[in-house]
Length: 114
Image 1 (spheres, helix red, strand yellow):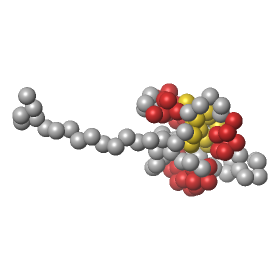
Image 2 (cartoon, one colour):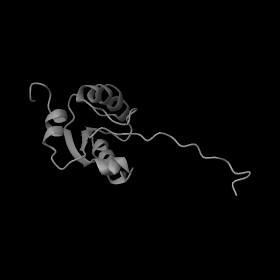
Image 3 (cartoon, one colour):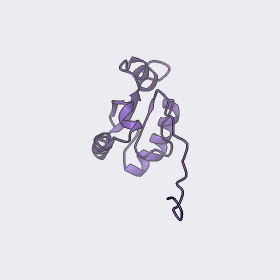
Image 4 (cartoon, one colour):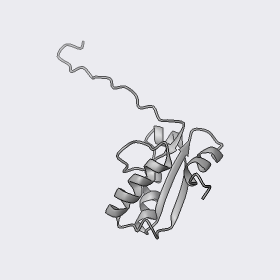
């Protein structure tokens, strides 16, 4: 009997792209290009986190999309936080497949290949 019970409203699912840059404190769920990511990361996040974006070492991480989808990301959050607390910039990318060569090319390098 459902009489007197509150109805639960269903929300639309959030569909993530197959590959992207994900950061646990980013204002958007993911970034689909590194220009947008570095604009937010270097200009907003690094300043607040006390990271010198011009001199900090940059560490690229390759993550599995399944952990982002299911919010089973505590180990990723801890690793990213630890690296940033030591003054590093972090670029955490993910892919839905096992071939990470595309996301690495797309997100770890600028258009000149650097």
